[in-house]
Image: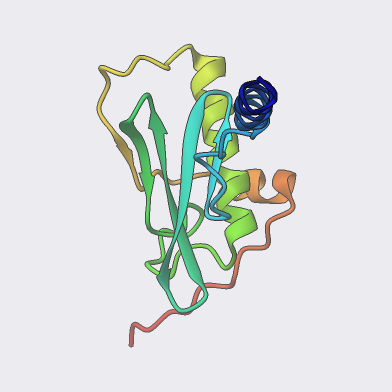
Length: 131
């Protein structure tokens, strides 16, 4: 009888502790962030150069692999700036009401340098290689 009661108590303790475990965060990666229901994934394009992609319900809606201010293939200089711009673009989608998933993917959009100033992002000077 004591053995049965001890067994039942162990089963209750084990099942209770299993239910109390937190579900792992699917976006625990430091290169990903969920913002207003959109998944932002930042990726390193070159050495010290970052781009990003934005997904809604698993569908790609924004892809930015070049610097959005200069259209330089070097991209953004750090991950934090990539997250700032991606959030800004998501805000613009919401403001325009253009969050329809049936639209084309927005790829390598050029963004005004004033937005960089607004978001506290420094734009590297462009070099002119033409002779």
